[in-house]
Length: 391
Image (cartoon, rainbow, N blue to C red):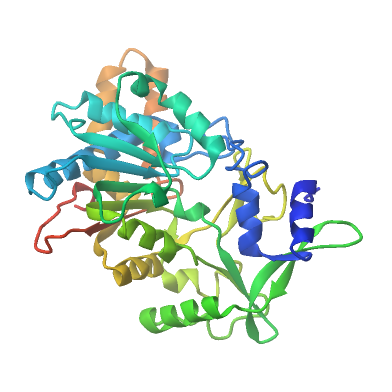
């Protein structure tokens, strides 16, 4: 059944019909029952889905190399003579930030000197998992804080913001073409069976304005010409708000976003007639996104051009975009594979497991097709930041 009592009560309280945006927000972020909000999300091979950091520490190792390069540049270019921050959004179970700190801790460049770590995690249930994962480093006195973005003083942060698989889990609006016009997808309750079903609501003025601006700027049409009845897509209404919140906190800094992404011509094309959103549970994907709300993950791809456009409108400089496979190869994945061959030559099973995990990070049909976006905001406009991951 797809009708948990806690969700039904919320929908009834809101009149019996809610936007898909509200449905996704409740299903993922409700503090008592949401997939992330309650802390029930399970990542990794034994969980509901695999993320890059959950495969092994190798992912954090490669990203750590890039973060270290940026930290050195921020210091040596005299852009930052104050404390530097590494800020991680939605840190999952803490695997990524743990691996990143481990890399910097073991680095010969004293990269941890003068660096503080901040985790921005809205879901209390996940914070508990992160603290357990980071207990070793907390015990060593490494400066790790949990804060809300609103707690950070404006134009005050020098450092690096990281968002790995964050934007794909932000609640989205879903737009659907119905009876010759664009509508807002909604979720309602059947009064007899109490089951959830898709419904429609009118487009809000905020949504209409956002869509028209993107159409003008990017030369796209939503829905595309000749769209059939029921054509549906996602609209990431919160991306610009999220980016704005970060931009306002940065003094001198770099933003790295890693996520599923598609080009606009494919994202909003005729063939992509049901959007990109899927549900993850027990390592299986499902298009039935109304099933098991609160007990499964919901995720949608982001649009490359709309994300870049949202960032540039705010003032971010776009340094480049690349596929994860290409980024990791530039950061030394081939050399890492060779090291495994040498280090585990007497333990074939361990060597093969490590090799498989590394190859999944670059496999185009697995995690290798993720996109890396690099933006920066610097007070000195002529300052140059180089990025090995974009080589």
